Length: 106
Image (cartoon, rainbow, N blue to C red):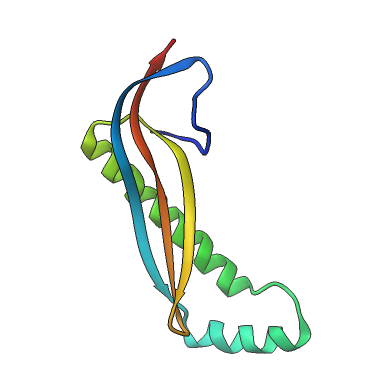
């Protein structure tokens, strides 16, 4: 499955458009990460636990995006984007979305 943030794929043409697809996950921060984040906000620096959680969330969202695109018969997702939002004080929603298409070499 080709996934690109571009609207076109060089050397390929879009032969079929299956529509919007998305992959969604909601992550909860554990108490250790929250305490660590609170301390880091005082002294500064990267929040390693949070970075790891968001990276894993993006990977899971992409896997779900691919699963939905494959179900529709696509072999590529174009114009892929991420969207994140906070739900309450401890939950983070991560969404990967794009357009499921079938491409072939031009």
